[in-house]
Length: 326
Ligand SMILES: [Zn+2]
Image (cartoon, rainbow, N blue to C red; front, side, top):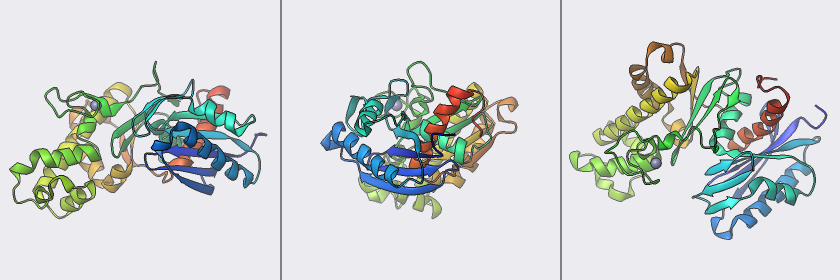
């Protein structure tokens, strides 16, 4: 490919912006990390990103094929606009065109929501290599998802597909950050686990977690689970049950071959989710939706490297839509 065998990936997170110069095998050749400063506004963030991209490009071994950016929030890949990202305080920010203008030439830029970027990272460099039908689930502060079906990323009418965190599973359930009742994210996420401890604490007066009150962290919950704490077990069981339901819904809709679990909390308790949520999932679907399905931990450790896959994916979509493989 004449226009380069390296790409730049950018992952915009709530606390940091990670950038990497990445080759076609997913190997990081150079990296930059910037602090996210929501208070400075989107223009400052776009300036920072463009400057860091230039630094990486200057050090590249050859021409750079493009820039792939993963952003949180509601992101439209067609317009490159971030409509709404609550953690960043962004509304209708023209992320793609803003970065492209600052770069000042024809370096192409692609933008997707962060979970889509991560899923493509798995497809090109990670646990989904060679897999045309899979679901990626990111368990972190919130719960996000992405799906590749028949080798194509599922995006939907308003680029809102696979918002699994807001599958409203329990009509009488906990109120979610979004305002709905009983969303999956209100159970399967850092926020959800902490809410679970608060909600169930009175039933487990001897739990070490109950004594921590509002100061409890997901880290403490996982440690307590390891130590056999019954409150931690109850909260994690509730989360596993919910994640299993989410996986069941995904399997009944999309019949993926693989579930890939990522995100900080996904990795921190990967074995637990794979065993416990996996058992719930298998109980809740018909054989045709579960036979041959595997559940694995994500293997792309750098979100910036994952985002660089947007560049290769965009070319594949244009050149040969059905085959994401090289
Ligand atoms: Zn919700």
